[in-house]
Length: 133
Image (cartoon, rainbow, N blue to C red; front, side):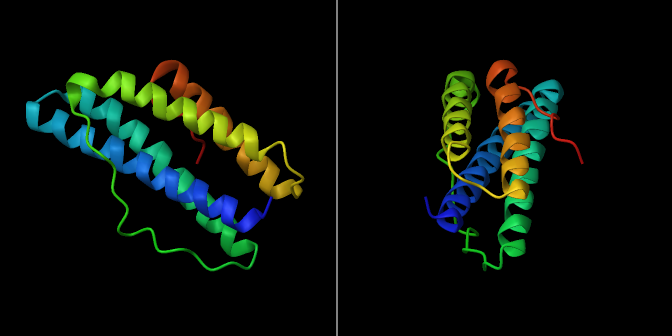
């Protein structure tokens, strides 16, 4: 496994996931559903934190950062959000489990374990705020 491209792929996926939850939060806000808006914003915050942590790790490894500013996430809407989110979160769990099967330096391994733990919580509960600051 080539570590830098693998981390960049994970970073881009996390950005797409953050956008997914941000769009849902905006829809919930528009509907006046404060509880769902908060739930989606919590998930968004965790995913955005993962983007930041992966970005920092890439820079620590001496890599530049791929441009992810124009990434998008296909909207699903509030009616179909749970099934879509569950599938997306399970895919993230699988991604980090695969990455952790490789030879990694201690810092990268610790980071990926932390992210995996959060993604497992997301997949199980479809709720956020599992990331430690």
